[in-house]
Amino acid sequence: MNKASKRIAGRTARAVAEPAVCPLPRMQISTDFWASKTLAAAHDLDIFTHIADAGRATAESLARALRVALRPAEMLLTGCASLGLLERRGDRYANSAVADAFLVRGRPYYFDGGIEMLDRRLYPWWGNLTGAIHANRPTTWDPDRQGSLFEGEGPVMLAVFWEAMHSLSTFTARVLGEAVDLSSYRRLRDVGGGSAAYDVELYRRYPQLTATVYDLPFVEDIAARKIADAGLSGRIQTVAGDFFADASLPAGHDVILLSMILHDWREERCREILRKCYAALPGGGALIVSELLVNDEKTGPAPAALMSLHILIETEGRNYASPEYGGGCARPASSTRTRCGSTRRVRTGRSSHARPDAPRVRRSARSARSGAGHRAPGASADGTHAR
Image 1 (tube, helix red, strand yellow):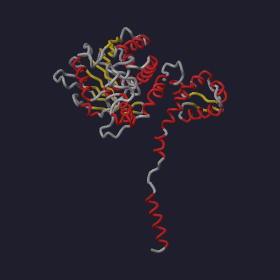
Image 2 (cartoon, helix red, strand yellow):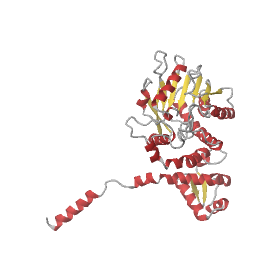
Image 3 (tube, helix red, strand yellow):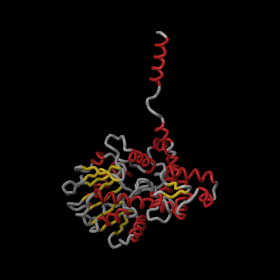
Image 4 (tube, helix red, strand yellow):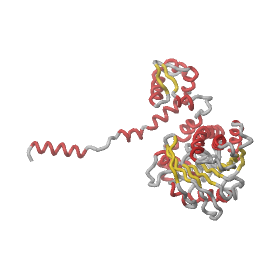
């Protein structure tokens, strides 16, 4: 081989040895926590409320207000601006629209509880995801010693959790109201209804509805308070219950909602919940199952797949694929709707008492909330799986 041929062969060998992909996207995955911790630090320092009160703020004025040095103040402001939480106008920073709506103390949809719960309670437990994979059981609480994830949680953390869920659920309930037509129904039973955010929003869209929230006793007081705040105590009631301990669900409703409930439980317990829902429905009634679904191929989408890993550290369930809900449920025709950047698959059907083991469902993908069983903050009593 002559010298020219050797040079060409050497270049070819080096080209073959070079990876065909760039490592930067993988690095982005590894550093995604930088963004969440930046938001958490800004929330802890309440910078969005400081800026809202001042209208706009310079790095110097904010450093003085927070009693921190200019260097870290400026770095934090730059980080928040890079994430779309702040906007730079001259030498001053102003809240972006999303920060003004969700991150300013006292705003109707202030998301204080969600950030605090994710950062202080759930972030540390994700540090032991490998342990949860080995254990194949929840790691945020001890199922051998505690009756539920709620047991042992202090009132402050529970209050934080419910405020977070209520804020998220308000918006997902609006999407559900668009995706599923409830105009022909009169009485809604919201099983595991949490703070009643769904019931309030669905009533506002379908004012012919009355609703009953069915959840654990300590959740009932939270729901009643939120219902009263919305001025809907005459339209929405609460009933304490436990969908596993109770022999049956209360009857008298023509539509039942299970939003972000079934993913907390293993398949046989899901079927138990579905059978009880079916038995409580009259002929012509409907069951709505709203969940974040993984795709049939089990390759994503990322929000559903990663939330499923979160469920691993919190409960016994997982995010299921649509066909997996077919065990014990008839599978009617489906349509796909996209709202707020995520896809929600909606399946519709009606019950007919001919097959007590096969309730038909209206199934949509996504929401957030609690559950009337032995559930936990951060699970579908929803934690990050909001309901």
